[in-house]
Image (cartoon, rainbow over all chains, first blue to last red; front, top):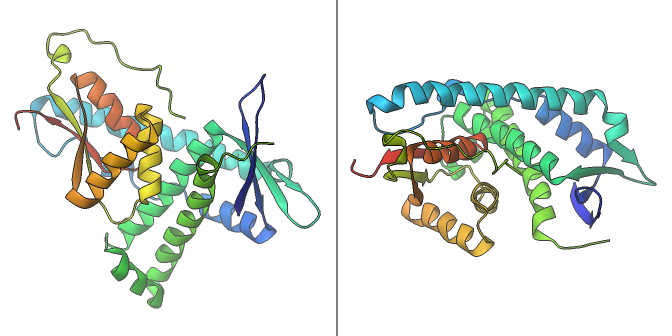
Length: 164
Length: 94
């Protein structure tokens, strides 16, 4: 998957166009299908246990649960409407996203990346690479790396200033 | 982009106390470019400032991102954690 151009619009949000193969599309949808991987109650508001933090810790967990539900619905829609979302061209598919859609995709993909890393036991990256050799951890390692691949492709949109 | 308009309103004396720190902690899993992007998206910072804080996280293990009232600091921690960054809120005197 790669970013190819940004379409500016005066009446609506700018659109970012990505080019991908059918294999990329299938991998992207499979990775998004894993969402959520992290647990909402794994979030910590503070490292210190102050009285004012207790109720607010619950608020954080609730906010993260709400975000999970919201993202899960968007992912479900993307999978369901994939024929409309991914436009076929001669040899590739094109995916058009606005800035807001890129943001929630980045968040969902990073949930899969961080959650998979946590399931590997939060290793250093060199150590994580060994996980691919073990049957029980290879799936987590693969999910972590693939979500990283798609995140990198999405971030290209903000790096480049190619306009059409 | 996160909705930066939804900033909380301060009401109580405690919530007006600007002594709460938002700290981002290092981890080996988040990409440097991703962390820079999140700082830009959440705080509206220019790329250079976002990158400076990202490098602090990477090289020093943490970066103090902003000092704010409890409610605003909490809002930023929610935003940062929605991107799955390891960010917390700490009282300045701890």
